[in-house]
Length: 356
Image (tube, rainbow, N blue to C red; front, side, top):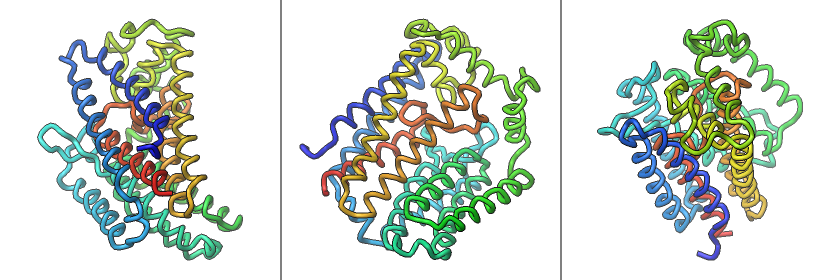
């Protein structure tokens, strides 16, 4: 118990408090549906974090078969959801278990971080060989392709960002990095032509030209920017946001919960929230710095990349600085899969801290 990072637990608890407060006032007209479910998800998440904290993370480090099975299960679920998943707003990315939706891509993110941490920790002195970069890219490419087929561009970007970040941290030659950038540009063109749906292209095009479709593809972003701007310095007050409470801002409980909070607590409150996120990332990286093995260090780097990239993308699309790609804000947006897997990741992190 003494080895648990209680400061990190407190930070996550405060962020979850922001989430529950926002969802409570959004639920005044729907019998607090999202609030009740998110409260349950948070409770399960803290329980999973506690269980993982008191378990031994070295089962992932020392037993390759266990890790491969974990990765294989994630791949099978990603493939299965394409055939048996529930279609929500044009995306087939969730299994429906009697009112509880599970998104296997969230499990895949954690599996990829664990697998790459294992792979790179065994070969970090040989990362100058191009074959290791290619092999690790295949591990990530399979789930990324399955995610694109859902289609879920945002989550595919997160998986690729995790791989790229961990490759760079593991050591890579400059020419190999330039080759990867060139390949990435080529794949981006292929994705635009072959994989992206029309609505995804419209989101990107309206991001580049917001006035093109103000009542269609760019409507959500325009309402989000209005909500954030109307919050001013101190906000309109908890539960008093007009854009969110009057229904002008769509998806206020998921993709645009940052705008909901910004309207209520203003610039000062949002600044405090972003400081909490940065403290969370710092504590994760600090655990990695203090770790006594490469697997632990790389896991902390990979997990921090997942959270940091989701924060940047979600806040960016709320402010109209990035295209809308449907990325939730960690520990803040409504959703059981993301919340519980993120808490599980923090539990593994706590186990690393306790066993070092």
